[in-house]
Amino acid sequence: MKNFFHSLLFVIMLLTFIISCKDDNPEIITKSKLSGFVQKGPFLISTSVTVSELSADLSQTGKTFNTQIKDNQGTFELSNLELLSPMIEMKADGFYFNEVTGEVSDSQISLYAIADISDVNSLNVNVISTLEKDRVKKLVSEGQTFAEAKKQAIKEILDIFSIEKSDIQRSEMLDINKSGDDNGILLAISAILQGYRSVSEFSELLANLRSDIAVDGKLNNETLGTALISHARFLYPNKIRENLVKRYSESGSDLQIPAFEKYISEFEEKTSFNALESIVSYPESVNGVLNILNKNNTLFQSSSGSYCLCTTAPKGFNLKIKLEFIEGGVLNFGYWSYRPSTVNNWIVSTYEPSHYQYFQVGENGRQSFMPLSFMSGGGVKIRISYYENNDNVPSRTRMITVI
View 1: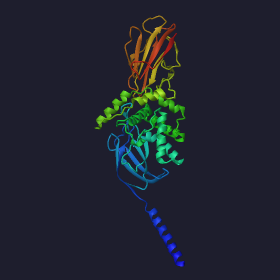
View 2 (view 1 turned 120 degrees about the vertical axis):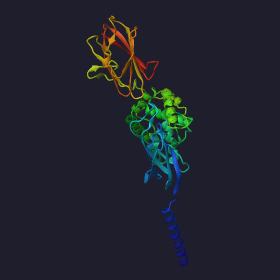
View 3 (view 1 turned 90 degrees about the horizontal axis):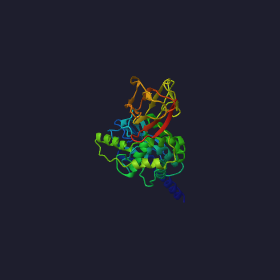
View 4 (view 1 turned 180 degrees about the vertical axis):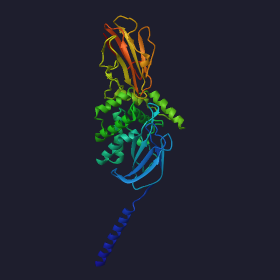
């Protein structure tokens, strides 16, 4: 009996040793190559890309790999990765091609992706993978599997943009330069988020959206929703496509820009968020001089008053103003006047015999200013039409009175 217990104890000790050895030597996951694209529009060559290993609870283990984007299509590649976990987080910091303005960004942004690379050798980093990151981590912390969390998070993001598609691919599989509805959704959301924002404005919006939806998957901040639809309604899908075709052609890439236009239109039609009247700044006054374009300024004086046309149109945003005499007063020469030498960043058309004139912003992204006076009062009515990114139909009109 004594020998039996000795034997049993030996077996237990041996099993403990074997298990201990297995724990000390966990299975190593090897990836001979991991590649893909970083896209807003495509990121630029030399962008820094970091891959961090994650544990089962999606916290970083401290193991990282670094590389750089090797072309202007946003291509990255890592070789001979050895991991103890198939879960990774990717971060890309760099300049990118702005698909709305058709220009390269003037400063850097950061995009992220978290993924399970057990069965893949390629993945992409984009705005959807960035938006979902914090939400996925929250869902996993609440007990969902990683796959369940990814599926729920991307559905919640699509809901924000009024998009219904239950079978969309994982975010890291999407590509703005591949055909297919899923890729069209990515490009539409990318363009809506960009809008006519500066890089800092875009980065702030992305960070605020991530933070808001992480809690419950819903966009509860109405101000953020208003910002999304306010820019979306002024987008020119044809111009976005033209910009990307030109960019990818110059980079030597095959062109497969997906059909994204309908998803922008559906967001405009279906969203419950309310748009701002305009995304263009029309200050009430400049250096104490009343701005004719500000909606709060409706009553002006003739001859004795000096006013101005002033605005700052965002980068990539076309703006044209029309002044048009409607009724009232006595015509002496013209209903308004200005000195050409004082015109700054306005392109002014000739004064038409039927008493209207166009004022178009020259270089967008900087202030346009010109002094202007009214020559005839007595209740003259002048209509101001704002052609905000629309060449044919004014986005709005308003009437002013000159006394």
